[in-house]
Image (tube, rainbow, N blue to C red; front, side):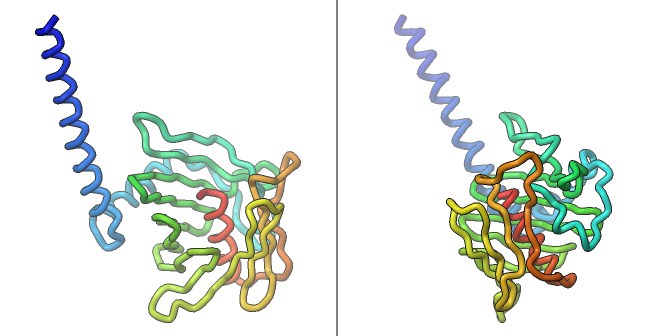
Length: 220
């Protein structure tokens, strides 16, 4: 009995040691990999892009009508599991057509998401309460506390989200005007709830900003 107890003690000690080593390696790798300028970060992006291409269906073409047609519905969702840190799926239009494909990988406190329409790619890198956003490989802004700030030293305010978790809708302010109303996915009702309602016509830059915030809320 004493020998069996000693054997169990040794096995448990070895298991805890291995788990500790794996944790330290994963933590160190995460700190290196998530540096946007590092080769490891670029390899992660290439890996996610490859996986996204493998699961991405033929997306319906994105045009000027599409912001008002995008829904909150998702299809073909795959959740993270014991052996896979990836989650993926597609967002549809109110006509149940796939219009956005996305894939997410979480490592520690950092979450990396790539979302694609037929004509553009968004990258969201989230840590704690801040999210860096890239559009087609170029920095678009930093989202924190409901505000989207332009990259660089100017930190110009690009958009501001007036949001309350218990309300059905949130107002997205562009400039000084309420340009878009975003739906709250937690309180949406009906079979095909719209992701947003436009209050004014959007130019290309405003559409990019609106879509970035809408996707971040949907995929966070």
